[in-house]
Length: 116
Length: 111
Image (cartoon, rainbow over all chains, first blue to last red; front, side, top):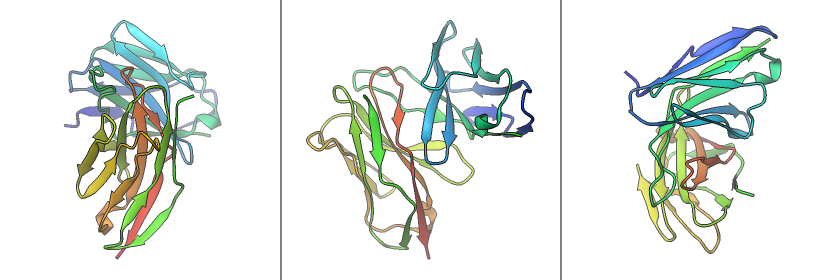
């Protein structure tokens, strides 16, 4: 099984619908992240969580919410999906950065969302 | 502010050609630097990293050297293969673990 599992892998939905993307990990990492990938824009951070009781907004959190249900689970919700939220979404995990700075991220395989 | 700039693609090369993908960054302090690779239909995975100035990261024949004086971390490989075709992302990050990614460079290697 993959270290970081995302479901669903593909989803097509309509404008205004509520969508949840789920992420679970077996790495035992405290830190989890949601990124969005768009062509020509790279990866942009939506939300991140450094432990179960910690939730932080990233650079593009508007229109999204998250829930950290357990150390191993971090879900991303779109309360009312709109077409410009069509993108590839990645969940990632990491250990805390040490003296050398940021630690390595482990990514899931991605969830492709299309909003019509 | 913090940012990463990498050369735009696509980069198209013949097999066994030399590869360079440029990456420069702006950051406060001296962050760790990374190259991630994304193969078709997959998530990103770490290719190599360097944590301080003059460090050289290497993996699978790829290399990149942390150049503080030019704020660069260019990716190189002496002889590319078709299997190297992927999107390559440069990134930097500090102790907060909030990596800043470049926009990605698509590499296509033709036989």
